[in-house]
Amino acid sequence: MIDKELRSLGFPKEVILKAIHVLESEYRKLNIIQIRALMKRVVTSPAFYKDHPKLGTVAKELIKKTYRFGSVPKKIRSKSSSYPIYGEEGIDTVARQQMDVAMKLPITISGALMPDAHPGYGLPIGGVLASDNAVIPYGVGVDIGCRMRISAYDLPIEFLDQNREQLKTMLVENTRFGRAAFTKPRDHPVLERQEFKEIKVLRELLDRASDQIGTSGGGNHFVEFGILEIPEFDDRLGLQPGKYMALLSHSGSRGMGAEIARHYTRLAQQICELPGEARQLAWLTLDSEEGQEYWKAMNLAGDYASACHQQIHERFAQALAEEPLATVENHHNFAWKESDDAGNEIIVHRKGATPAGKNVLGVIPGTMTSPGFIVRGKGDVKSINSAAHGAGRVMSRREARRTFTHNEVARHLKKAGVDVIGSGLDEAPMVYKDIYQVMKYQKDLVEVVGMFWPKVVRMCGDKKYVEVD
Image 1 (tube, rainbow, N blue to C red):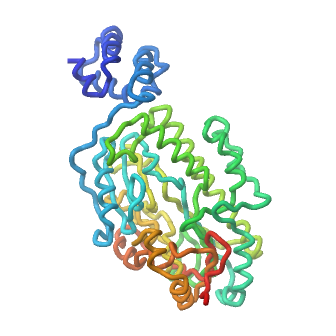
Image 2: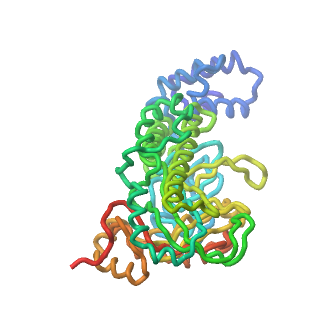
Image 3: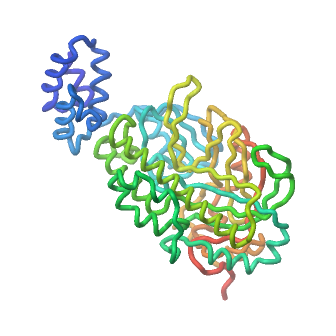
């Protein structure tokens, strides 16, 4: 009986006899249900039990003999659990298929797909997944803690048009994108965190993190000036109705977050073998040494991303000689410990999804030529307290470069009255969904508090986006 139970849990035959010996000598009073629960924890997280006074010998044998580095094969469910889809008619089939696979995982409790969803690695971008005591590195994403931050200033909106050239220069001087860095990066308390000393992979990333502090990534990351309109007073935002000049930034944890994601995904795949379709959804349990280490690294990367935005906005406050009247910041590409409606702890992955708990403020950007939104969450349980994180792509970067011309995009920007520095065809406004439609799909998830129209945009590179002969 015990032999059969251990085999069903994934114990290799070389370890079963040792496990039976330990159970008979140390756990004779346990019934079969208790034995199964105990040994499931051991085989799932052997590193956590390697120093256990009774189970340590079994755990060490698992680490030593089980496949590679203690990995155990994991079975996924044959059928995907159901989940709500917001704006289903506008969501790519591949994104749906990726979410379907995530909903088959044995650790999955619930999920939801946001209206900006499109294909990603592992969990689709726009995917929300609640799990039981486990975190999926690729469910969090490569750009850990990527976030939005908006600052509103006590400056007349006319200031923007009257000083466009100066604002362009200000953007070039006070931002760095992609591989570029400041000659003299600013210091920040996050670089003194103990995790950089305790975790090997972080020790190796400290120099890179120090060089890139206060900078932005490539791709769809940006810093932009625009006009923020507040239709009515919101006590959490604290801005009177009216129009304000504002600064909006979008970026994440830079090279540090990407390396953390790659390192712990490889580790999760070694520990937790999954069939090909689910391989990128390998997880780490939070009662394992590896899971605890990733959780610390993930939170550090999120705090580092926030520090980058703090420094970006500090630079512009100094350049403008204006302190912001109000600031809103929120992040995605992260995992949170939350509670379900029964009070049980769940791990909520929001990969390209905005937290939208009751009365939680967030920022959902549009495109270069369409507005972004400051929103207040409604705390919708079905969406796992989540909303979209942007407009969402309708075509790949490669397809965009094949579809549009430089002059075509430049004319589109000129018509909208938007100046752009450093963007490519793969970030043309036309590669994104209609943000108004996205917001319509999630009217039950968030309430609009303010709208932001970009006017002067900086992305990766220094060339100004204008028509060429």
